[in-house]
Image (cartoon, rainbow, N blue to C red; front, side, top):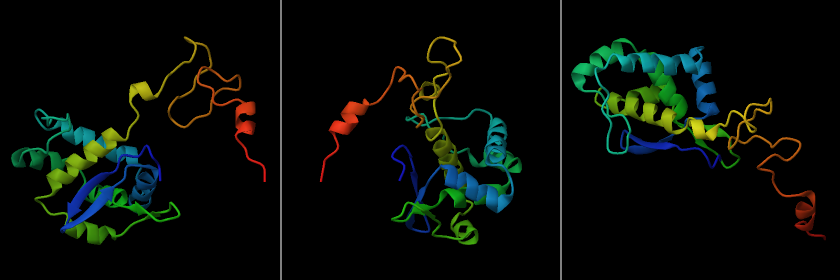
Length: 180
């Protein structure tokens, strides 16, 4: 399991589930809808723009829109896409680290009611925000503008010369090995 993943918990039908916002979610969404997941996220952003002023809770997370604002929001967002995205995010991982979906799209859709849609939308917005890299997570240049451009803290390797954040030396690695 990815230690940098920040799944969210959701209770549907009295049972607790996890929502993961990772590549497995995006791929499952694309397979289910034949649409690019960024198109869905963009449609959510456009729909959010129809809400007069998005209010935030004490943690800075967006609060669900009011019922009268929800109608305008939902007119701009495909429920089919929302259902597919929530289903894709509602998965877990088996002991081999492979994704498993405990519910079909239809079963998951049955658990989401008109009363829980605002909460689900809020979780989708929070999950995509919490699991997206921040500007600090990606550093555009290492040396003030040279062509040595690479992300950091995103699982990438260091440059061949070791760079500023090189790991253990070969001697350190070899000294840590045990002989049998």
